[in-house]
Length: 252
Image (cartoon, rainbow, N blue to C red):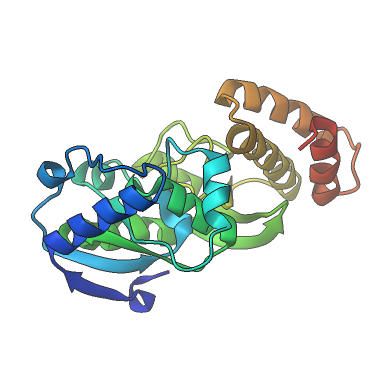
């Protein structure tokens, strides 16, 4: 959801604080244990905005609990997001969720177009200018859907120059959560069609194992290499067939 599509309104710091405490009390915490929010929360000014859940960088959440949230009726309380100067400097493109990881993940599971979030005016402006803008520049072509993920060709040279020098061939939200939306797979545009298909299969399987099963990158990468090698040796009619077959093999 880009700047001209975003709904935003100014809110007070007290309103943000009360909302966070109320959400914590009624959500996973279920108790009056608000940690140090009154001292941690910045002075602002604050905004309440609507953001696409795919832009959220999530960590430390339970998939089971997130699915329980996703089954709840009604609108989720706003989450709290941040985008600091260090994120902008290192080329990060995702909004960090400081409070509400389970709600953010639940919105992703629902396929929601947006979720409400609190963010300081400073962080929001910084993200629109750096994070969101970097996403638009990096993507070069939408290849469509594969195994439930959106596959994009991206400018790999730009990623290595401005974001992460170790990024090669492809990437996903399990391996590069600071730059890749959860429902996307990125492939370097500077490859031939066969390599693009093989890498897309690799990234889909790797993401399934890291985010779905909680595997480490090294373990998931090794298994994805097996899937990619099988595809390259002509075992499957096409990449979609390969994804289906490898998921059956792995019990995904």
